Image 1: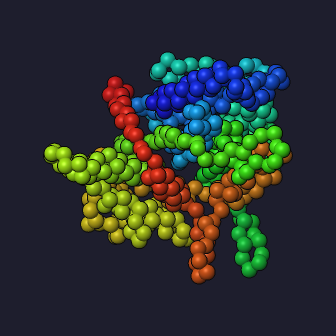
Image 2 (image 1 turned 90 degrees about the vertical axis):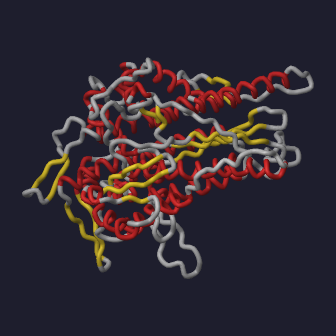
Image 3 (image 1 turned 30 degrees about the vertical axis):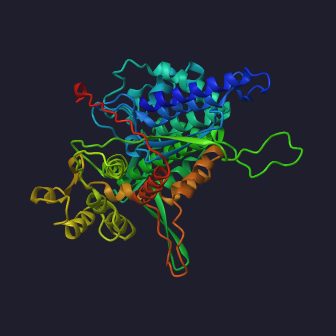
Length: 526
């Protein structure tokens, strides 16, 4: 909410500057971008409208009801808003961090999946319901929207209304009717995928998709794949040895995990596509120079100003804390250190230089916590990366490895009870958080089987193929560094997030930060 208010304020100031400038007869009117409406007509919108309309889109696809917040962002974002010398907004760009993909599979009691699913099921008209193969279905009929038993919002916001806002925002942002149809087709496809069942065959040694499942045909139509290819992707895998390729069947449990991986990867790729499309609409197009005689002028950064707005996850501590909470709290530790250094240490250094009499305020240094989580050689996430890249490792081997390497380290806790339950504690700046290692290895690998990627690439839908390309590029190994670097390393979620965090801190260090402390305990919603 705070981020939206800040963006609305900046956009309003920009609009006033632009209107004042246009009031001067010497200045030409501002150019507006034509966008195609649902009825095929053109509508002219300005950049302020587009920047603001990114919010409803990202909220629908990336926000959800949690225990304490009915519109909680389940991803982080950094928005750079650019202004020219006269104070007029000329463009923006958005970078996102760590979408909570596990929410697609399950939610805690009292929480919901992402808003878009409920908005579609409540807000679509009969024609749209038929188009996206959702006739006679409600949120209670799909596993991924019913597993928590929670279907509404407590803040009075109706999914019917936010669906209308989403459609309007997509239109203003320049998403064509075809692009919008592609997005809702994928959202509907993952709803049906959550209800796909797998049968055991041949005494439980092999498996196959349930060909009688009523959700199978919608999946095939929406993804543009064949029944044979879907079964092959989920229930079989290929191995290569000595130049030969062999196909092996998988058991039911592994095939079901493959369905979950397909849901998470496809939705996440669609979210990335949405962010890229938004950036393509609102980012300043830079060129080095103007060509003589050209009708327009080149846009460069010279004389332009940037205001960055960071809307990032808050510190989290739940009854059960997993890999996602460790990444989120690591981010909070890093930003808290940056806050301490900038606001407290630098301010006090200035007081000393100016000879102001005052009492020194001590503040804790949390570098040891950051080292515990991400220091080369013994950081928790580095140990996890090593486990994920080694064959045959499990959550149990990861837990044993951190107990062996970290017991006795500052800020680390692993008592008898925790070791028995494969848990560990970290003393964060905000307090002790206990983490359960169950699922750490799988979540950090976040692998989609190669067969599933090939399935999406075989789709008759160009959009599904594009999502497959996004998935493939995000999973590509990191390039080797140096002439003797050895084999490329696979990209892990923790490693990628740590790299993003380092880049974010470097970006913030180049700015003059201002902090908005948001205190929203929501004690009544515990």
